[in-house]
Length: 173
Image 1: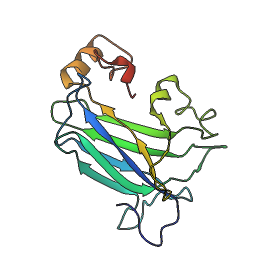
Image 2: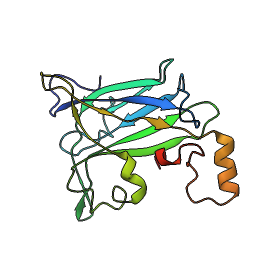
Image 3: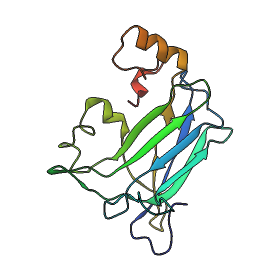
C-alpha cells in the first residue's frame, strides 16, 4: 500500500502477472519495483520515506499488486509528460526490464517522445472500474526474456533486445 490517509489523489490498484519468455510460464519470486510522482507531479527524492516507491516479489502464480494513487504530470521542457508509472522487473536467469506504463486516453501521450513511440502501444493501459464503490484497477502483465536470448539478440545486433521469440506481439519495450 503506497497510500496514506493524507495523500491526495485517486486510488488505483496496479496489478498483473510476470511471465517467462515462453509467454505462459508464471515467474515465481520475480522482483517488481514501481515508482511514480505524487498527484501534483512531484517525485519524493529527498525525504527518508521515498514515497510512491515500492517493491514486491511475485507469488507462485507470478501475481503482483500495488495499491497506490494515480500519478500526476510534470513539465519536461515545454511539454507535460503523460501520467506514468515506472517499472523495473528482475528474475533469475532473465533479462532485466525497465519500462514505463501509461494510461489510455491521456492527452499528453501524442506529444511525449517516449509514450508516443510505436513500441509503447502495449504499455498504454485502460483503467477499469472494479466495483460499485468506485475502486479502480489496471492490469499490466509483463513478459521477461531469458538472458541467453537477450545475449543472442544483442550479438545479432537486433534493435529490440526484449522481443520474445514466441510472443513478440507482447513485447513491452
